[in-house]
Length: 386
Image 1 (cartoon, rainbow, N blue to C red):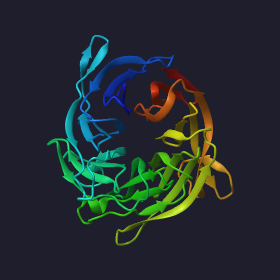
Image 2 (image 1 turned 45 degrees about the vertical axis):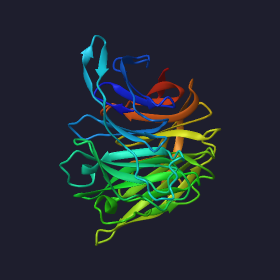
Image 3 (image 1 turned 135 degrees about the vertical axis):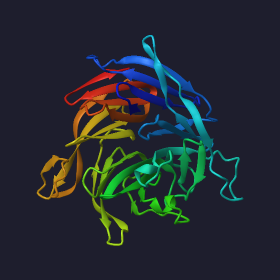
Image 4 (image 1 turned 180 degrees about the vertical axis):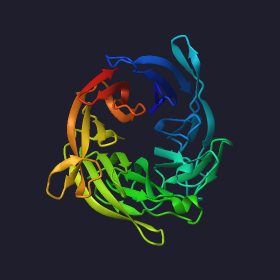
């Protein structure tokens, strides 16, 4: 899900191999129902769609990346035309499709290898770059996470170095940007696996072609007792990464990681604290989204228990008190505090997404499964649209 100046654009993919692009506009609606502004269907996936993400370069249309069974990855340009009547018409188109190269003669092509997760971001966010290039990482049943550079202007893929060193199958992927110096920003890629562990990579060496293989910069073992189904990562505090995961064990785990930079420019990730919130839901978590404001960070989570929970991410200080995340130096870790909950009408929940509109305080949340349900979160109240 992504926010434009006015509408919220929701993209869903499923077992029918199709992608549905739907627009909804909440502007001026007090009931939370929103206004439908058009729908578009994208065809081309050879099998089930398992994961979606988007990446955006200023001045260009957003790029949607979809991945799924048969290790298919597709990039789509999301665009729209002028409104026709009461509806906006979408003109999205396929820009590129690709699959990983066969890695060795031992690979059995009859096996249905699949991607479970994908994440992407513009290359210019971490490197001086004038081209319309994006970094795409996808992981699933393979032994590595495949990372490519995708040129949207030419519709071409450049092979990059794989991210290796994790155990188990990849179930979720995310990324985060962190300013290290006034003229330097680093990107970090994290994944959760079926072993219950989290892994974090710093892929600059891979993107610069300096490394033949990139190993994790940090491994967080035993974050969950079993599979990690959903994952968020953000720079809530300066020089720190906050990694939030939800698993089959019904818990939410919050890890605070420090970034140490040596005089040589090399960086090192250091585990500062870890906190597990047990029984965050009464069933395995299936989706999470983290939305940051100027003085707060709000977490949304959902589960097979058909509940949507809302959490404030607070700083837990050395004295045991808590405060809203505002950059205090006296912190020993981050902890979620539940501030709201709602019952869902969607069965067999599979994913959740959230976004804000510009600088507004409203947060639009979408939960999908057997059906779709959208919410507008207004701090103290929540309105729903089925």
